[in-house]
Image (tube, rainbow, N blue to C red; front, side):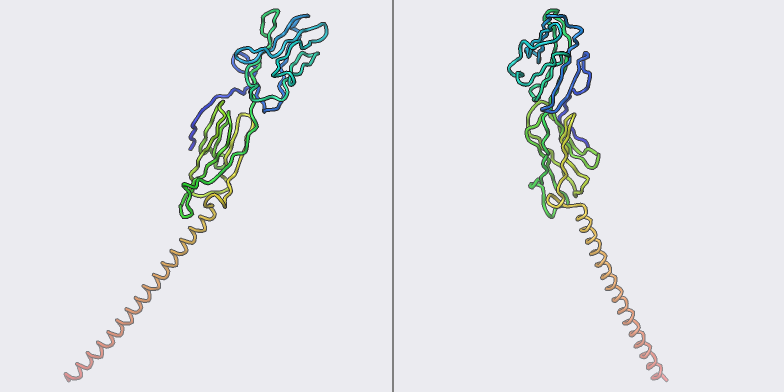
Length: 270
């Protein structure tokens, strides 16, 4: 059964609200902001702003045949690259803190030329599956597993059996640790724990022999129980059959003895 604990809405479509272009990338991937040169006149100053507070990242100025950078924010100084012919700006070695809304505006005309909403996702770690020792017993008919991951944000952690979701938990924005328990009767290769965001995932399969009863092992135990029950029934059947035979033999002897006594009585009467 699907049990979502926390829902979050993360924007990763190509075109977002009000025509804003949206882009999702992995941490370290480059992101390019394109500028339409046909909308820019000579000596016009273009500003690249970031975030809700419109922090100034860079200023560009168009010359006769090219565009040049005249100011770059210290935060992006070694990572921002300008194509002087096309006017496109590329942010290299992106970080999760680079996620947000980028605006390209004209200082002269006070008009907006482009907007790009960027989401930078961190590389996912591999989730770890362990046995919940407080619930596990070698004699128990079921066992409890827990899947965990440390310091994550904008992710979903899920238990699967095959392609079916058994349970799930999600978190947005916060950098926290997640744990998701699972109670099962026996374990086989169809179980998996998956950590994912909109553009990547990591999957772990439990180790059958170390965590809890395997379904194959449970089958052997059940067969042994059934076999033992069959042996008991067979012995009981033989015992009852022997007793019945003894009863029939005893009854036959008694009948023979009775016949002899009857004959002797008849002779004495004569």
